[in-house]
Image (tube, rainbow, N blue to C red):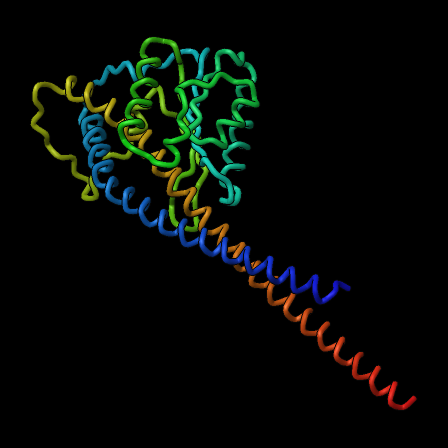
Length: 292
């Protein structure tokens, strides 16, 4: 059995850990609150923009977009989102596990024809170890401080390379934020755009499509609208991943705090029992010495 000094040292260590995890939980909760505000502020714009595109597609407009061109997949790009730091449960390990599974599914494509844009230090390290081409420069700062300008630049580069034929397909891996307790790991196609899929869910709640007056023409509007939707999709994935990271860290730190509390209680009980046993032994020694 551990000595009273050792138990007291473990109680002190657990208390120090408890202070750290509790503080980290509070910080993560505050960041999560801000991230949720950003997502909620962007949702009306995203929903309206998507609705406009869906209404156009459902109204019988014939769209010929270079972003929707299907071709044989010889070169593929992947944008994968993680965090820059640890202590967020299985957030990063789940992303990295899905990334390696994705690599296995595309084993038929030479590694020199696979391009990865890692957003976040944790996945960037994993990608480098896998021997796959990393492009896009240092994108780790985007994971910590999401902003639309950098998301727009990334979307523009992906679109340019797809249209020029440098890349035949682009996919995304990120966590979709559903609630503070639920973050869904998502693997989604990005390019080419599936216009038939977009047009399948564009009705208003009343089931009526609005009648738009379009200037200068439907083709010009759609030509401008599709790139905007693609930029917004990258930005949404970035915000989703950021909010999911803070939610995962908040939950992980709450669990760690609860475990530290339970450990302190168990150690305190063990310390009191040991102290009581030591006092009893001393009393027995005194009584025994008196009788002798």
